[in-house]
Length: 244
Image 1 (cartoon, one colour):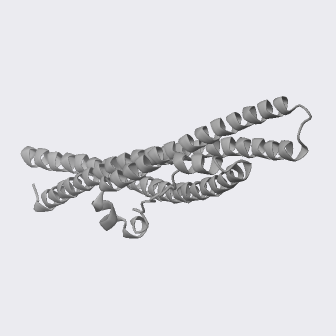
Image 2 (spheres, rainbow, N blue to C red):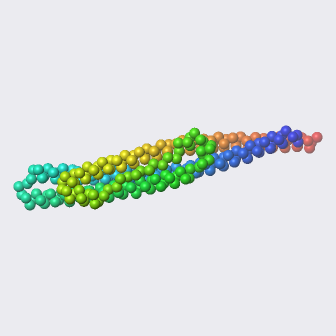
Image 3 (tube, one colour):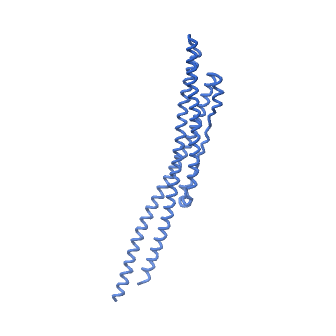
């Protein structure tokens, strides 16, 4: 057999080995990236849960404000039947206090999924493949932000002290909590925006890696075909020499 086919055979085998190694590295990057994406999606769901709880708290607070307005109107208009007036006032107050309690619990409950989201996303970046930063430096440069949603809490003691001041104190507490809830919702909303951007970046990188893997598989198929063709050439050369 002449040396040329053998050299070509060795070159093809070397290229196949190199491509298989690169494909293995790329597949590992993709697997780690998918794990990162799952954790980021988990964090996103947890932030969404926090937002859901805050919206429920906002609804409870709005109900408390409506009742407080009714209480104020009753105080100004009064009723001829003092006993009926006092009973109605007590019922309204109980309803408002109940809504305020539910509101405060929801506000504080929202902190749990918000904190869990921070942990999930921090954990996600610990799984992000560092190889991706060297192989895809531009695309990976913006990946890795962790939104920290520091939410304000509700104080049952504060609510109780405000309620002790009568309808004015209750109104003050409701207005204060309305602002606090809105600020918390804004923090969570900003966190969700950051997470959505990070997910889009991860999805874009994932698509690029998948496309690269498809190209590698295609190149490997071509190289293996060339390898088989070269083996045929070598075999025919040996066969012809044997016949001579």
